[in-house]
Length: 364
Ligand SMILES: *[C@@H]1O[C@H](CO)[C@@H](O)[C@H](O)[C@H]1NC(C)=O
Ligand SMILES: *[C@@H]1O[C@H](CO)[C@@H](O)[C@H](O)[C@H]1NC(C)=O
Ligand SMILES: *[C@@H]1O[C@H](CO)[C@@H](O)[C@H](O)[C@H]1NC(C)=O
Image (cartoon, rainbow, N blue to C red; front, side, top):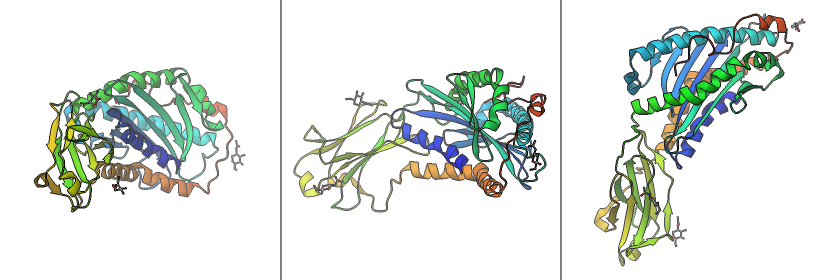
């Protein structure tokens, strides 16, 4: 269950942060599993923002693009990804074996999983970045990278031997990867994607009302970037009381929407001039004077915030691809108590390290 939470959290973080700037995230999920009949031994998934952009499993042994816009990255990208995921497959299988030995589980036929989640975030306004890499074993935290100190931190005693192996080259590799390369990749994705960073798309503004007694909603949508000012004026003066300004929410196409509600009955607003003002850097402020003719009815319930649907879709994809079987795994492995007893010598001569220090660089 722990992994389930870990997997979905970054998506929530992304959405919440959107109010302050456009924060893009790149996420890689790797899962090696043993003992599950119909599941590949290794599955790798790439996500950009909340979309699965690429998929690999050890059965097909080929990287597949899952978003049309990623195809712009070309054939070479697919080849490189395939190569790098084949490399991961091998390393994860090796590491899973090592860890099973650590836990004295070599002979057992049960289900075991090793998962890595890593990635970074990038704020396209102030350029701030943040990276992380963490591993889970059988659904529990196992080891994670302390990026500041370039150090792996063991979450369980059984991870100490791996930690010793990885501190040094493996930690430096991931630090460099997460702070430099993966940020370059985020920008590349952002440029290739539907989100063009220099793009400025003006808002479409409309006035909506459910029925004559409900507040008038000034709704701005379809704009990019996300910074917008939306306000109501009464006879040219900014109005703060009786106005409720909503959060900026993402639309599915990478644009944003925001609303400001005027909580006033029509017999009140008919006596003065009320204007909704929308300021966006795509152009001059838009002034929409409130008249009865301009109001569109939204009793059918438009404006379902994109955020809800977006999150549900992302969560479903993740659940289907990765989490679904982790939960199965957890349930099955609950009655297989881990028995820690690390035979050091077995690990130290396997020649396998984490997943990235080899000559084969990780491509995204
Ligand atoms: C709208 O105004 C009415 C009357 O002033 C008030 O009772 C109600 O709480 C307000 N609603 C909102 C959402 O501000
Ligand atoms: C919104 O208002 C603030 C304060 O008046 C201003 O600094 C900012 O430039 C405005 N933003 C836009 C997008 O017009
Ligand atoms: C591994 O587990 C088996 C069965 O419980 C036990 O007999 C054996 O001593 C354990 N080995 C180590 C190295 O702890």
